[in-house]
Length: 359
Image (cartoon, rainbow, N blue to C red; front, side, top):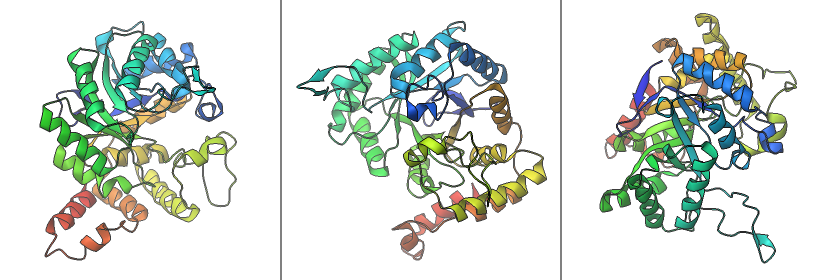
């Protein structure tokens, strides 16, 4: 298993990370992902460790903390320094407290109050005294950025968190945060956990050039396009019986059928050439992209996990990448389509676009 630097930090992470959103299945949304219990989780984690994947991603909001609990129990037999744990906060956490008959207004967001409370809860649920990578799961527009960042810096200085990261930020959210950290000498976001796939390439227009400039490592969530690039979705065929799309499609990125099938056709072509599966090819394409530090894979069972781990065992050729690039390319969003028309006054935009195309 290859390791890469996590952005500008000194931390090295495997190119694949195991996501534990399938652990627990405490409600309808997460049951659509999976209902892995402790014994099953331990088996999957041991398979990861054998393959050299020692990076595990979770969040306090995954099944309301149950995913963290199961992960913590499942890694208990391993030396703590042999694994890297990534978890997150910001979304509402059901602490059961009601004030004036409504849910606790402070049980959500990236305030000093909520971060401090949630990091302590995550440490307890995970059964550890430090978190390797701690994410803000989303940008909180209601909390001053300096409050969030100073709190995270204190956690780093206290040794409870090793590195901090963002997730699902827009470009200006992330840049403003980095600039404030730089201004005060605080710990800064080393990574950005983002949605990126062959059927979701918005990341390339603003966030990828920014990541190149600021040396921000991308951690990719839902690399198979919210379960659409499993190879089971085909023209003229009904949705497979086992698919998260039955119960969770509205919570993820929306994709037109024709665009999806065009990309799947290209994946089929490359899969036939390589002797690999559609998901393996889709994952390997991401491993060729600029800024990507690690791709987060999930699995309901050992068979799925073994297949996904194989995605890091080969490299697509430049010609095969080009086939996938052409099939998945979409019209740039504004202002990028406009900038690309005027190389004379904006050569940087054209260069960045060409760099992204080349990978």
